[in-house]
Length: 191
Image 1 (cartoon, rainbow, N blue to C red):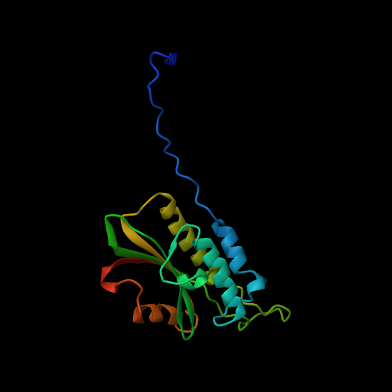
Image 2 (tube, one colour):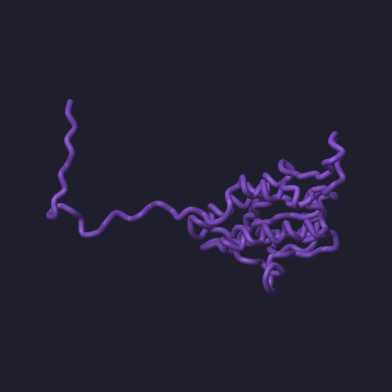
């Protein structure tokens, strides 16, 4: 059997080119780089209400601000923060289309326990928290970044990065006590 290749001549070439179906690559660090940054010794375990937690917030807001809008009025990082007594949740959104008043929350907690963990190495007391929960944060950011790169979603997508979860789920409790979006119109939560 032989294959026949159709020959294209100027007379048979369509007037328009085929549309580009390749979506632009999402902007920002990949999941591995996010985990490596959050779990680095530089952030000393991201315990809430510390300078290291604030540094984690600055890093994460820098990432999410590339593809998602702030939720609150305000300037700079404050527009992304839901402050509460025990910490600060990071909230960002990708506005929806025809069902914009319905919300899907994609979340993970970015805090960890600082330097208060058991270790067999007396020289290393930092609880880096790569699996708990830098990896979850990286997955949540990657998922919402990909959704944003694909265009306007039907529903509004909320990226929620919780703080103080290691202390008793305090960040998510604070959100439910003062939700940025009506809970009755939140149709799904992906953790």
